[in-house]
Length: 357
Image (cartoon, rainbow, N blue to C red):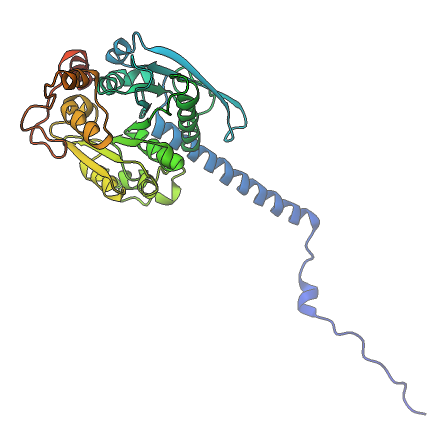
C-alpha cells in the first residue's frame, strides 16, 4: 500500500515570525510626535515672522520733538478700506498738507521705520515747499492707525495703495478739471514701499522719489558686519525694490546722502541703476540718513523742476517777475560738490533733524 501523500503547507518566514508585531499605540505615538514637531515648526515660523516684522518696522505711536512741532497745523485725515490681507476693516491716520491751488500736484509720503508719521513732518514741509500738496500716512500698527498686529510688508503695500486711491478720490479739486498729477515719495523703508506702489499703478503715477533707500532687505543686511550669515532664505519680509523698479513707468528720482551710515550710498546707486529711464540720481554731500532732504533741498528743487516740471510758489513768483530762481552756482542736481543748507522754517527743521535719533 503506497504511503500517504503529504501536501506541503505554506512556507513559514521564521525571521518575520520572530519580529514583534507593531501595536496600534506605537503608531499613534509616532503620529502624535510628528504632529508635535509640525506644530513646533509652524509656531517657530510664526515667531520668526513676528520678530522680523518687529525688527524691520519698529512700530511706534511716538515721535521726536522736532517732528511734533512741525506737525502742528497739519490736517488729520482718515482713510478706511476693507483689507484683503487681514480680512478686516482698516483705518489709516494721515496728515494732509494742501497747497493753496487745488490743482497743485499731489504727493503721497511713505515714511520709514520707528517713528509715526509726525516724525516725518519736517521732510513733508520741505516737499510742500517744493510745490507738492503732501499726504503722509501711518501704516497699520503705527500712530493712530488701526491694527492690533504688527505691520507687515504686504499690509504696508496695501496701506500705500489705499492712500494713493484716496489722493485721487477724496483730496478734492476743481470740478471738471483735468486729473491732478500724483507722485509718490518714500524714505528709507518707505522707499521700497513706494517702489512697489509705483510699479503697481504704472501710468497712473507722474513720478517716483526715493530717498535713502535700498535694493532689497537681503542685500542691505549683507552690508552689516554680520552680513556673511546666510539669512536670505529665512527672510519673510523681503522688500525686493530693485526687482520691481524696472516696472515703473514714471520718471524716477533717487536721492542719497554721502554720509549715510545706515544704508550705504552704493546701495542707493544700485537701485537707481535698476530703474528705467527717465531717471536721475542725486548724491547730497554731507547728507546723513536723516538730514539729506534738508541739506540737499536746493538740489531737490532743481531735480523736481527739471525731471517732473514741478515748481514751488517762490519759484513761480520769480518766474512771473522774470527773475531767475535757480540755485546758487556750484550746486548741481546730480552729484554735488557741496550740500546746500535750506533757510527758513524748513532749514531750521533740517538742522534739528540732523540731531534727532
